[in-house]
Length: 156
Image (cartoon, rainbow, N blue to C red):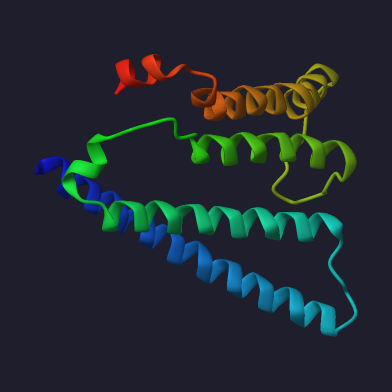
């Protein structure tokens, strides 16, 4: 019974996060529409970023409805489900590296290197380390698909 109540809290937390990010997404869309009305149309990377934000909100809505509708016995059963959160996080990490390579953005929030060594390490982290970790996280998310059914039953 305690696990079922804990699941309800996870559902409510995911619902609050989904609502908060959904409101931020709607406000961002209104801002983009007002800029487009003034002639500053968003580029391709802005569109891809908006798709990622929609996926992020939809993931938290999915988690919320799964935890809020689940019965106590359903939560204990697990199968060959992929980890959608890991897949989304890994894809986001890969996307950030690709975006940094092909569409660098100058932002006042960017860190500025103080010497050449620091600049090289920042470049390597942004272009290779984070996307490489993203690939590993993405593979971790889809790894249940490669497990045999006996291994899945033993893990549960």
